[in-house]
Length: 172
Image (cartoon, rainbow, N blue to C red; front, side, top):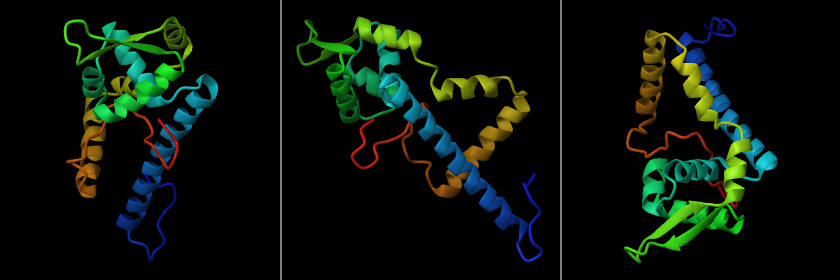
């Protein structure tokens, strides 16, 4: 339902279109605010936290596995791991069975961080969605998929994790 009634000269579809754009901007802003809060409070970004979570769940991982599970490119993951290693959150060691691969493991510092850091934004969203009736879940999913189609963005790769991307010189 619109926040305000459209002017007599404004078609309802234009008003709905503007509401959709405004809602998408609010979603984008919520993601950005959450990521900035993680960075300021814990000195870690959303994508870094996602990678640490993947490593934690597997006990040890490789760049390829992390990239696949995070829906990121291997080169992006290497950059993230470089920063995590510099901060003392991970260690990388050559795989003795295949020296071309590196195993990535968490340090105690990372384990301590993961115990204290709040859940990622998408975790809370997924929990809230699960509490909705199935028909409402389907309606939301179909509506968002339709927006993706209208934007012509079906072929874009996207992580199921909500995080901000590299903007300018900011690193994620």
